[in-house]
Length: 289
Length: 290
Image 1 (cartoon, chains in turn orange, brown):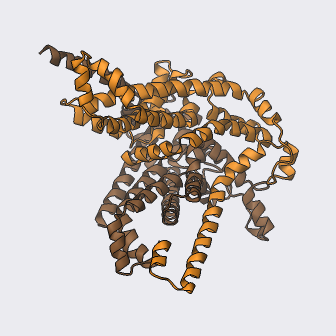
Image 2 (tube, rainbow over the protein chains, first blue to last red):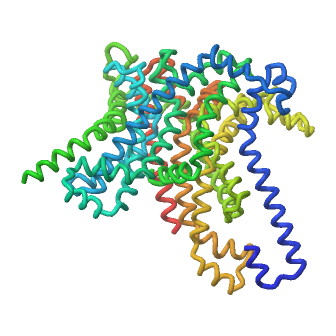
Image 3 (cartoon, rainbow over the protein chains, first blue to last red):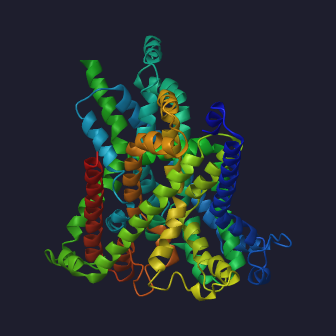
């Protein structure tokens, strides 16, 4: 906008105005970004403080970095176990989501059959349903089949609720893959499964990696299902153990902060590595819903 | 013929696992909860059929409607907070230099943070003694403004909405930026020839071209904020004295704290009905304005 103004042969006064506008914009945007990041900055710096330091200087930069809080969080609050549980549930559910999503997307993007239109709408419906409205019935259903208090109590519903997004992101991508590649494979004697594993899966890697990053973040952070379906403390995932031990240890701020930092670090690393994919994927998912 | 059979077998084999999993965990629960809404049931033992009693109790409960009103406060705060902030930022962030990309990343960052952590950190931020908000107020001489933000029923619903606003600005910002960048260059050039620069350009060129996107974002914002639960649950649990109760916490507390599964199921059904009605109303209103 400003360069266009310059083109019109602006006066000195005009240039000063543009300069002021530019400066104000930078100041405003910087302040706003810092406000957005501040809660996390405060969380991470606080987790390096001792409790005394936290109470006397809650907002100062830590005077020395102590890793004692992390050690205690890991041992006392059993966060190590929680991390293992989160990892098992997240990784298994992510693999399941990607595989089932890709398989369904392959069929929906490559074959025409009677129920296809119905299936597309049926899967779209899932994105409209508020997750917490399924808590009570899911709890009683899983109770009846004895699924509660197991990894599967989380893996299966996580996968089921992520499937619609996975399917739609993958269908969109697979539809853009040229059909000639498959025809060549058919001539070489490949069946449908051969085409799926040798052609469609490898070619869809960009879409599948977006799906898996989104699924990973969602499963890693998921809270309500874990809250309701998991009671056994040996099976608690990270968000669940954070929510619960924040009551018991609520005066031990340093410990709570360190525990939260441990939970947040993997997702921040993911974000730094795959920012563009995360942004695009999350938006595609939300607009479809 | 054989290949058609083979194809049918393949379709069934490939679609069945996803379809079963999805139906069992996502679709069937909706029907189960409306069915169990007709029973008095403690979660164990026999369920007694009581007709519409649970549904009538839900609709007549003042706390249910307070919870619904609180949900609407969150929806309103999200629409009035997230949409203007995202739109304003997007207008300032049209280039993709390093600095502007940094601002974008910073605004989007809360999207990847666990909602439990979001609730806990903001719980500390609102803390009466240690919280950063009260500390800042005390330091700038506004001691009288300090209060227990999450406990004071006059303000706590608004306080609870702030972390939710903070949490979800990112996607809307990115959507708006993409729309602005997609405004065809010819339109901008033609406008420039007509002397539309600065504010004029904003009002006559950019905003009219964005109206479609703004409507979509408002609908996304409404349906998204109806799903809010974690942050409220972690910060207040619906208290004190049910002053921050939202529909989901009301359902949770009735089912899993006092074991009224039938009643909780009736609330779940009402949540789905009310959410769908709200989304439908917002879509109709948005369409009419065209």
